[in-house]
Length: 141
Figure 1 (cartoon, rainbow, N blue to C red):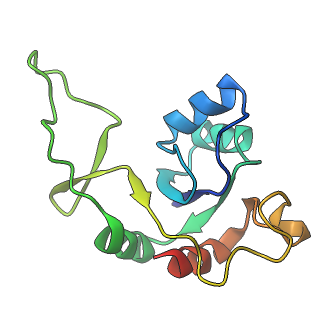
Figure 2: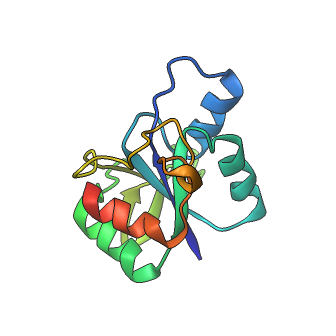
């Protein structure tokens, strides 16, 4: 299963720990999306940045739709001069290499009513939104 993570808030006044975790998740500015595997390590990183992102599980068909709509092909070499493989810079999908980060538009009709500083369970935009993440990403494509 895959987890889609959408960065909702900027990183102007955050700690270095949060900033480094965002970098590990391939996020860097608002309205960026990254898709990661559902592993305990990734879920721990998501919990560390839950006050700046919204996330939820997506299906493989929806992942293919995101890659088709917003995927940028990774054109740099996949290994360095010494033959070492460049892990973490890209992912392979249908025989092509793509960047891990997807740049999205702001959502049509905005985020939820209470804004980007309130959890999703209280009517805001942050944190785990479950299956509703697909609806948000469709509004952002």
